[in-house]
Image (cartoon, rainbow, N blue to C red; front, top):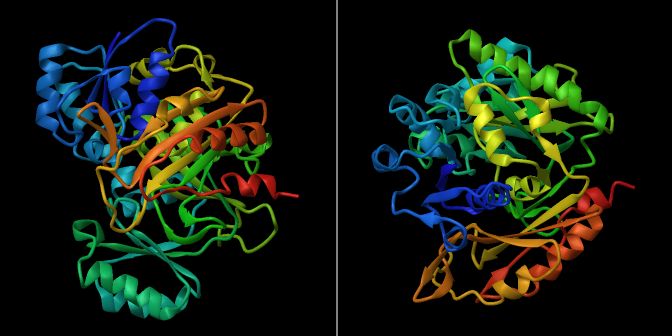
Length: 433
């Protein structure tokens, strides 16, 4: 098959890499890709959000499938534009992508579908939002409605922090259009995890569970990031919970969207809070609640989940687009995986680019390890940094401990100026007692 993968990060490198593992060798292209994808695919100059350029390329080159990685082009209607010219696309239409593009829309869908989620209200006026704070107690969650590059969710421990978050969004416009409407949401206790579901419009198949590490420092300290690592499976998601997640969360949303005339095809990513300890639950009384939905593969969860998949990955993506997905299409290996992000000094704040990376070849020689490029480019034959999250180092193992050890062995082969990484990936799994 001729396949175009849209995006330039670790998620897109992982998708490209997994397609390259198929027994049938595909003709792979990435728009725009990175230094890692260039080794297994042909990078093209079109940016991920340049809808016109991607559609123009597709018209001329007629790929059999386009797999869209990031949320922004989906929310801009890339899948719709490709569909109009007869190009098969893995990724939801613009209306479906609102499950990520608008938290208020997603919350409305969940409530209509009877999906367990935190109580929330939306506001466009800062004074009204502040006046409503007392009914929520503390801590309280303040969310920008739109896409905010992972920075639009604030967990406020004090009234002052909550009011500052509201002002940032509704008064100071720090999140632009994404913060023109805010949600105030009850704070839920428990352990977070991610479920990626493949959806063909009517049917859904859950991929292996995963859990990421959002905080910058060991021990889950410091500011939130796009994710500093992930592992799969997540022990908090016990096998008996998977049917509940599919039947009480994923499928009700798919059916509710269909009622609204939206045929959802692609990945429906559920960020869940699971309360196994008997602590405070949501007002709905459920011990599994949806924190958010995303309309695409997660990052770095994708780098931990896709290496665990066997079988023909192109067949799976095509079946989603065609509406013919079967449970048997998804093959899961009986292995664990761990992913560790190597980041640029200063991330998630300001950081320098253009640092030469060494040790990539040595890291790839570690058994069962693979290095996915997140923020890299090639300059004069050398691979240099071009982002905050630079590399996503993944390893498989017979169990999680072996996977984590191999991943860190590979990480320790790699270096660039001011690089850093967390040293406690999968600590929740190891400390469950």
